Image 1 (cartoon, helix red, strand yellow):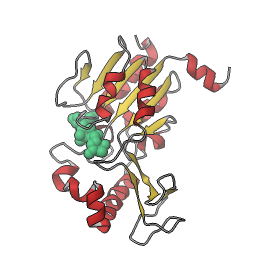
Image 2: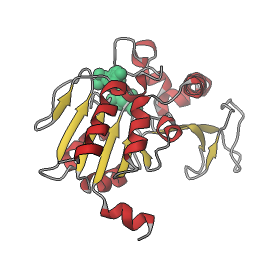
Image 3: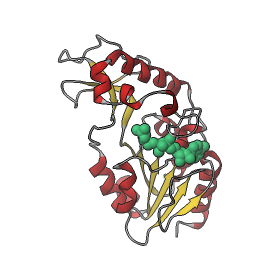
Image 4: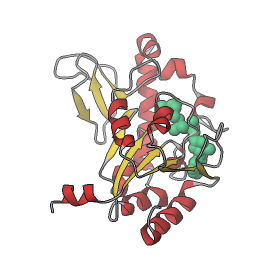
Length: 238
Ligand code: APR
């Protein structure tokens, strides 16, 4: 059997992550007491209006966060999820724009809210560019001559990858949520597409409201995720 076929024959674990999985790598979350939205006004740095009003401020906001991402390292939770894929078919759907899942070795990563390490043409959204060690400043242009922007989904913008995320979620044999307050839609609605009878776990120190029939591990990711992964590898997922 090819890798793909073997992969398909294995039980499918779908992992849905948010900023909390990167907190122990030193990256701020958004809504915790020390979160990003306590320091910055969403309207000014993460909306199309903010971009129109002051693109240099928006570019600087993401340039600073990109520097932090470059200095961050994946933590035990990211590495445990990468190891899980040696035993199961694993799909990661993340709200995070950092590349820590990929740097930990995860292969199937779908970024619902974009990727901070890429820039995008403001004329043709299919034109994406790897930034490497560069940042984006006013005057950086795509091949069509339009200003480059962060390849990030802002508030009030569509989430193009959502349908694909729903398709993946519908195929879950186990659904694991890690490090998200489940406060932002449509991402948080993914829980509604988990097939009936499939076990749902959430790893987070706090939640705004515990969704029904969910197993809530009130812990930090770097401690709890490796423990759960060891359990699922040794005892199976049911
Ligand atoms: N381990 C696990 N979870 C943690 C940890 C940790 N060490 N630290 C914090 N958390 C949890 C918090 O308890 C909270 O439930 O992570 C969650 C962080 O929630 P948010 O800050 O709202 O982040 P997130 O859910 O990813 O935000 C979703 O909102 O601003 C937009 O586009 C942005 O993708 C982001 C989206």
